[in-house]
Image (tube, rainbow, N blue to C red; front, side, top):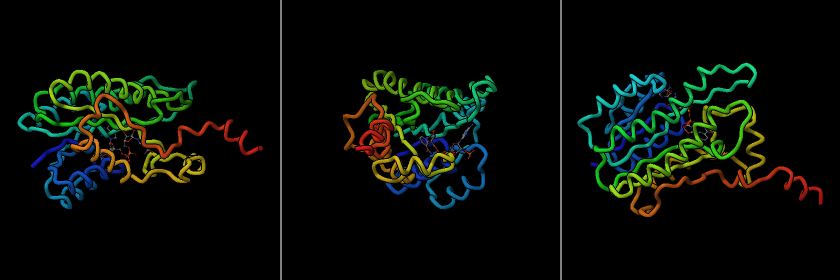
Length: 243
Ligand SMILES: NC(=O)c1ccc[n+]([C@@H]2O[C@H](COP(=O)([O-])OP(=O)(O)OC[C@H]3O[C@@H](n4cnc5c(N)ncnc54)[C@H](OP(=O)(O)O)[C@@H]3O)[C@@H](O)[C@H]2O)c1
């Protein structure tokens, strides 16, 4: 049975990824941080699953997770766990920058590095980035920077792992209807050429695809899954509407 480590399976996109990969026949090693009962519920539902509690903002906890996985061989690693902190530039706390970068960028890199000899040939590392990592932001600069970094390390790790027959692929969702929704969510739906935000399952389906044989030549790149949202330039749209 193939096995995969997925971070942040207790809610949202990570839960959808765990459900999809479980139905594709994978044994799931899943992490959660605060949502213990949700993680337990998923474990009971999926059966072929082990769960681990870890707060990736604490480097020691990340290293302890790695220790507890030391005897496990993996066919996949999905770096999904992520956090976002909204704050005005003039009041921001630099400790928040450290936390967001640790969870969203350092932990995926440390896991990829520490587990490097535990991947089976043909394994895939999937980094869940964001379209926020492809543009400037206003009140979540640390989040955008962390995702830009994740997109970049996907390129470097693709170079390093490729010769080892392990592919590294990023997925950059646009707006997804999960717990990370902001008050701007309705406007995002109206702006999207498809008239809606993504369902978590639509991100999970792409994860399953990039881990499959059908994606055997996709490496070191990040795939946008945004329904075309980032192609909508607001002034060009307004100009067209005024015709
Ligand atoms: N939702 C969107 O619109 C959207 C768009 C683009 C990209 N993404 C990316 O997709 C991924 C999943 O997002 P989501 O919307 O599903 O988020 P979510 O619903 O907020 O769930 C986040 C998951 O990450 C875990 N997590 C959060 N902080 C953690 C920490 N310090 N240590 C360990 N685990 C932690 C949570 O665990 P607990 O609940 O157990 O604490 C939870 O399982 C993230 O990387 C996010 O940046 C989301």
